[in-house]
Image 1 (tube, rainbow, N blue to C red):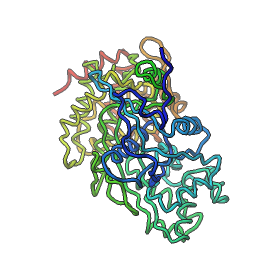
Image 2: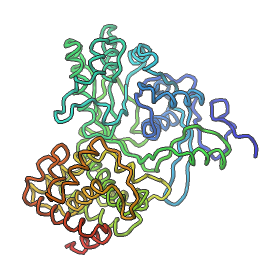
Image 3: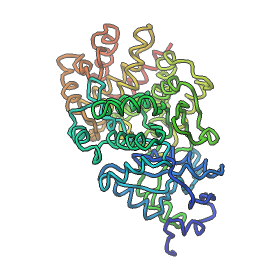
Image 4: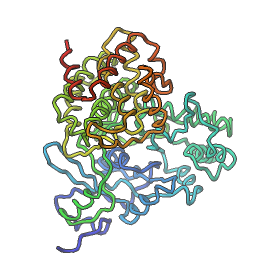
Length: 498
């Protein structure tokens, strides 16, 4: 076997002809976007859209400079630098077709933990017009239970006292915006690409909370000048595996040290509230709307909740991937019942979306056997996911007299999952959750108090106080604990379908 080709700018034309690659000239690109948190999702989503735009339009001012703020970002920074910031996007279709494209929209990467002032200067540069974020839910520094900025965080205290040596992203943003204001430059837009409802509004609140404590005058300027568009993002992007790297090297003859795998489906709905211009992403499939709320709600309560509806019972059965869950006709029917009878009735009107077709697409996407989205990944941090994805659906159905059976069954299985911590075959479950000990303790109390798990208020709020839901939940708990054969109980639940 001949030696594999290393992925870099010089070798682009040596790659196999079936590999799509940038045909635009990357040399003159300027970083109009600075992105904090370069992981798999950013590279399969925003960077993908931007690459498509650069490929199809004569623009040079919308390249992306990546930023890493933590030591954990160093490996990504080193690999991208070594590859001239190129990487391969591997799109896996349900029918087995694989599309490979080298993405060229990333053009630089800087590490904040090495040189915070360099990151601040990059954000403050006149050519930077958008600072985008994928920092995960935990990166927004929200105080548990209050929704306010967590000033008790030692990193936040440090940033207040050392404005030019920040640790948190909010310290970087305020320092850069202060420089722009002082230099008479227009503010950049701050664009969250995280899977959080009203992500722009949350980002705005956290930035302003921090800025008001540090510099009230700057906070007023930010409030008046900076755009914080809400956005709904969607593309299933599993963690890259060694098998993905080997596939490129053994099957196609080139070495990419950190490619990204994803499904072909991609969606991005953005509020058109930018403060200093924006790319024409709508020309490559993004949708700009006045209000993203209905789209967010649809996605969170169908796709994200749907993942948990499959994943938690699937973990107990012993399935390893979401595709295995969706391939089980019983699981697919249970998910569809949940979506049709519980989630859909409490959604808002979503302009331009056929909900039945959207749900059909979700079932197809979840069942893609070539996208190995692990059940363990779906189940991680369920204590922070379900209060956003599922509990509001339950609450609204209780208010409207709607269906709650599927949701009650899911929470009963989650109780069993948290209590026993093994699947039906006795194999230990991989549980990654900040509240896993609290969940375990509450679930263990079920033998003495059937509502013990549901009384964990940081997760379930006041659900245990609702007589109708409590009655349904206790009935499901009795059945789950009496016979923890999830498939059998799911079949009984579906037999009760009207």
